[in-house]
Length: 274
Image 1 (cartoon, rainbow, N blue to C red):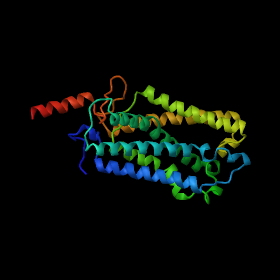
Image 2 (cartoon, rainbow, N blue to C red):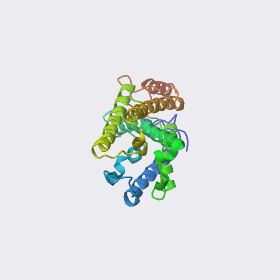
Image 3 (tube, helix red, strand yellow):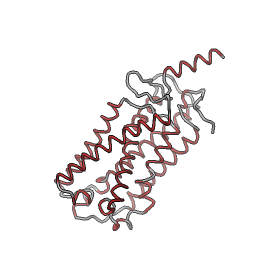
Image 4 (cartoon, helix red, strand yellow):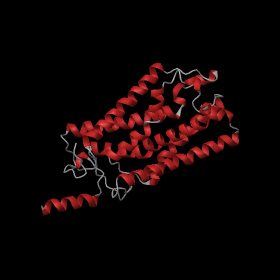
C-alpha cells in the first residue's frame, strides 16, 4: 500500500495509501448501509405521544445524517469502481463523467457529510452529558442498541477524519459550501417546526421542556454550531493536506485528483527534465 502522493497517474487522485482509502470507504459504505437496513427492519421506538408516529425515523437528524453518510460513501465506492474499471486511467477533460463524479463527491463531503456528522456527534453527546433524558432517554435503550448508537453518534466523526486524511477532497468556495449547508439547515428546521406546530409533537424531548425563547435560542445556537463545524472541516483539511488547501471556484482546478494546476505543471516540468 504505497503512498500515492507522488503517484504518476492523475486518475488515482491525491490519496495516501490508495488501497487503504478504498477499503475504508467500502467499510463505511457497508456499515452505514447495514445500519439503515437494520433500522428499517427492526427499529420501532415507542413514542412519547401518539402523534410521534408521524414520519417515523425521518423526523430525526441522526437518520438524515446516516443517509447522507451512506450517499457520500456510495459515491466514493462508485468512483473507485469506475477508476478501477479503466485500469487507473482517466481522461483529463473536465467533462469526463468520473471527474465530474469526483467533483460532486468532494463538494458533498465538504459541504454536508463532514459538518453534519460533526454537528450530530457534538450536540448529541453534549446534551447526553448534561441530561440524557433530553436527547436519548433510558427507556429507548432496549429498542436502540448500543452498537447502533455508536455508529450513528460516534463513529461518524473518526471515520470522516480518516477519510479526510487518506483522500484529498477539493474544497468548494466558502460561499458555495455554506450556501449548501445553510439550505440543508433551513429545510430540516422547517421540518422540525412543521412537526412541532402542526402535528403537535416536538421531535426531541429538549424542545418539549423549553419555552419559545428557549427554542429560538436553541435553534440559533445549533445553527452557529453547524457553521463552526464547517469551519472546523476547512481547518482539518488544511492541516491534513498542507499546500493543497485552496478552495474551489473560478481559480480552482477541475482536475479529478484535486492537485492544483501549478502542482501539475511542476510535475510535468520534472518529467521533461528527467
